[in-house]
Image (cartoon, rainbow, N blue to C red; front, top):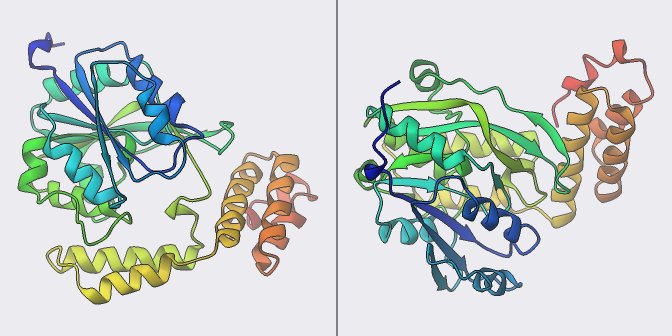
Length: 317
C-alpha cells in the first residue's frame, strides 16, 4: 500500500447544530477523541433555542471554531461553515451521530491514496433514538455501481468526506431548499468531477430520530424524491413551485412523525424476528396515529410464526 503523507492531511470537520442537546455531547466528543488529530472542527450553532450553545461552549479545544448565528437552515449553515474551512478535505458530521475513533484516519488515508475520488462515505451502523443498535448498512463501495444508481446516491451525508475545490465548482448546497435532500442535489452536482466510493467498514453510528425527513410515510417520501429528481433533471434549477411542493410534503404534525418513526423501527425489529420489540413500537405508532392500517397488520404479524411474516413485513409504510 502506498505510504500516506499526512503533511497533506489537514481536515475540516463541519457540523451544523439546531436544538441537539440530547445527543450533542456524545457527537462532539466522538470527533475530538479521534485517533487522528490534525483537523479543525467547525461547529455552526444555527439559532438553537435549547442548551446546545452552552454545551458547545463547555469545550476548551483549540480545534473548535464556533459560529453562532440566527436560524438559517441546514444548507445555508453548511455553506457558511465550508466557506471558512481551511482544508481541502471537508468531513461532514451531524449533531446526533457518533463517529468511530478511526473514522478520520481511515477516510483521509483513502482520499490521499485515491486522488480521483471527490466524494467518499462508508457503511454505517443504524441506531434508534435511545442508542440501541438496529442493523449495519450494506452499501455499494465501487464508483461504477454507485454512479450507476444516480440520481439516487448511496452515500450517507453525515459520514461523507469530499473535496472543497469540487464543492465550490459544484455550486455548494442549494440554499432555496433549507434542509431537504440538499445532500442529494450536491452529490449529483459533484458526480461529474470525480469518483464516488464507500469504504466497506462501518465508520459511523447513525441515529434514527423522529424528526428525520426519512420518517415521512412512503407516499410522501416518493413525492419528495420526485421533486428532487425534477430539480436534478432540470439542470439543478429550483423553482418556486418546487419549494411550495416540498413545504407541502414535509408539513406534517409531530404526532404523525412519531407514528411514522415507531412504525419504521418496529418494522426493522420485525424483520429481525424480534417480535416483542416490534410490537412495542407498533403499539406506540398506533397511539400517535391510529388510522394507518399497515400498522395493525404488522402488529398482528407479531403474533404469527416467523414463516408467515415474510410477505407482511415487506408491506410499505
